[in-house]
Length: 113
Length: 117
Image (cartoon, rainbow over all chains, first blue to last red; front, side):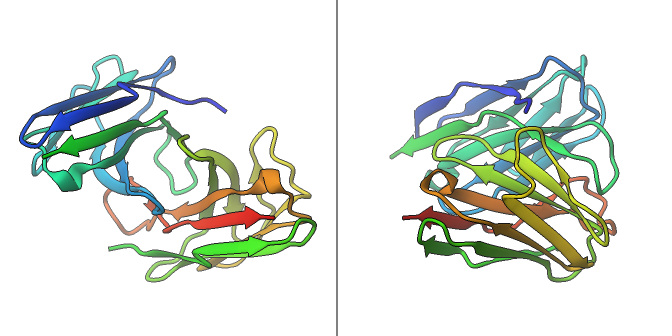
């Protein structure tokens, strides 16, 4: 099935640094979602974006819905050790409860002290 | 918030046997649930859409006779891996969305790690 391309694939940063990652698609989506997955767990929703150009924050996290509707980015400010994990973007075309999500390839984040 | 529970969290089975994984929406009713498979260091790949009271919809390349899905109630969907083989070893995750919630985000279960020996 289709996957969205995320970059970088992985990153090692120091505690306190800011992090940026992005997600691109060859097709448009009407909703962009960002999830974090810890080892051995299911993904947990971080931010949901509903409109092109929208910029949304959730604590130290900020995400934007690209104007073209084909991309999105996620920023994490002042990273802390518990930010370690895999971050996935996901695109959704329709909005009903039966609408499928298409996931990105993931960005693995490691935070060093 | 919406809670999705998966059981078991891990299972080891012998090659050739069948394994059933349960996915429950604890505080909402879900007419649709989704089953994903995730191999190590890879992303989530949608396997099938589980529809309450009707047949599941499988993604291309997923064998419906091998991965049996039953969604007999509005709060329970089951995935049965039949005649499991080592290549079926993976992390299986279900998800659903509470229609009462404003966010379009889906809630995921905590996953089931299947190891076939």
